[in-house]
Length: 247
Ligand code: G3P
Ligand code: CA
Image (cartoon, protein in one colour):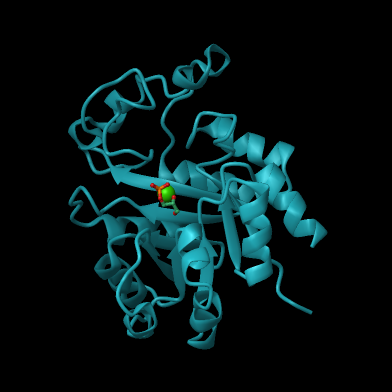
């Protein structure tokens, strides 16, 4: 029997809830049949692992400026919900430990993206891995990043934890490039698998999982299912999860 395609809620159920907040993760569990979540991590000024997508606060909170310029206590003052709707007022920033704990309680997997591509965060890899080890969730979490060197480092630090390489633009000779990695998975933006339709099979042949994002229309989810990807990450895990279950 073919392995089930995982359905992950991108930044939680971010289509309808404020991304990367507790209410978005809770809604994904309560209102969809998702297998888990995708989320994003940065360092605060005092070295706490905090869950937010952008390196700056401006788009998704009532704060402004770089996340790394605030201590965790200062970051907790900001409202991360109101920008999505008044009913979400009062959502505050989660830590990686809180998200891990939530995944443990709900038996969901988590794909954590290390946001160390635009901002340099020395020690981020070690800190993320230490928390996973502390919670003993090596088989429930997999890591990804656009920073491929970072993922190779994580894989060397703890080979038990799966790592994946994100990419969002066509690259020269992807079969050769990805055949050189020790990471477990390739994470292409969905349209790249439509642009070069042989790639899913090619990555599988080299023993890599194919985890694609951010697949937000029924037509594209159906296509990714037909291609046989391993994981579909969507802002609409309700829709994606139903199509996966039905196929
Ligand atoms: O991990 C998949 C996807 O989240 C990568 O892009 O910008 O949505 O974090 P972004
Ligand atoms: Ca992400």
